[in-house]
Length: 178
Image (cartoon, rainbow, N blue to C red; front, side):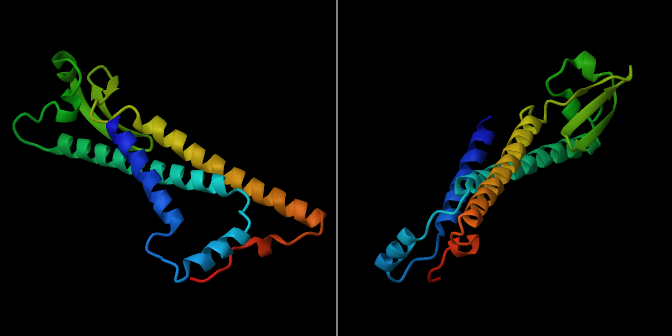
C-alpha cells in the first residue's frame, strides 16, 4: 500500500513540474506575467491535468505489476534444491496446499500469477499484490473519463463561440516567447 501512495505522489509531482515547465526561465518576468494574465484559460484544462496524472499513475502502477509478475515467474522457474513447489506458490498458503502444486501460469493482462493444484483447481500467488488490477483499472478509467470530459468542454466552448460569432477556438491558443 505504501508503494501505491508513493507512486501517486511521484506522478503528481511529475505532472506539476511538467505543467510548470521546469528548466525554462523567462527573460523578463514582468512581461511574462502580463502576457499570461491576458491569455484566457483553455477549456477543459483541469480535466487534462487530471487525465495526465491518472494516466501516468496507471502506467507506473501497471509497470510495478509487470515487475512483480516477472519476478514471481523468474522465482518459479529457478531450479535447484527447494524448487518444488515453486517459491511464489509457497508464499501465504499452508504447506499442505502448496504441496499439491503441479504447475503455474503468469498473466500480464490482468496481472497475476496462478498456482495450479492436483485437483485441477488453483490459487493466486501472494507475491502479486491484490491492489494492482483494481488500481490500474480505476486510474485508467479516471484518465479516460477526464480526457473525454476535457474534449467535451473544448467542443462545448467551440460551439458556443460559433453560435455567437465570437473568437474562433484557434485564437485561444497561448502565444508568447519561448
